[in-house]
Length: 77
Image (cartoon, rainbow, N blue to C red):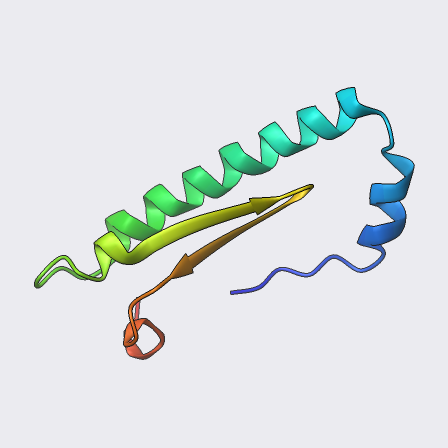
């Protein structure tokens, strides 16, 4: 699932203060890790490969949760 926020670049430009950006990045990380925990708990288990394939990536004011297994898109959660 990809969540896209329209106008995000303009919002990011307005948050030039490092203090605000730092707080937002911390909130994004906390949210992504919370979603990752739920994804791991809800992943079907046979060999645990699917559960162990969840990865997070962070950039400035963004975060991603991806599953690196080749068959993840075909598994119904």
